[in-house]
Image 1: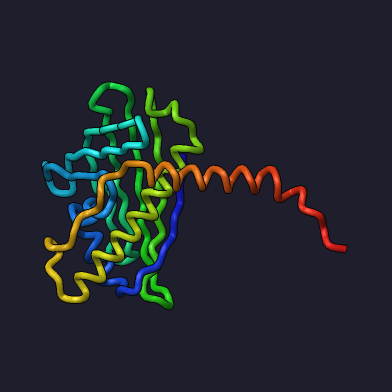
Image 2 (image 1 turned 30 degrees about the vertical axis):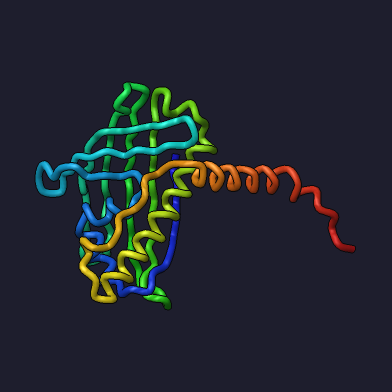
Length: 194
């Protein structure tokens, strides 16, 4: 399942690129993600925990920066993991590309997510909606982090992202699903003006 997101930040492209050079700082902005160890250069171990109502998925796995182009300002991260209770596996490929914008920097994110086992039973639409909510939260957390650093605060003093879970994510994902259904079934039947 391929999910794309694009957002802008007021910081310069060099400041944003420096941020993406520190993978633990990047992971700290993603709700539910926790890097536990750097096993080698560009290799990390960690966990991702997502709670949606009574469903809690906790993946343990590895991530590797497989490509980094300083000239084009692109980075690729491959990650995979398994649910700690043996209910499924996940693999993802994350590609980030930076480009200058009128505001400062445009950030294009492409996330190819593959789920297997019980984790995949929740449906493509719901998983895409929850992932989109998490990417939006990541964008907001990253912007807050970069703004705080630009203001002269110590990066380690900037609060980390909240855990990924709870009713709020469920409601936001449900709203996205309802909008999608509304568009599919009701917008084609709007009366046309004369």
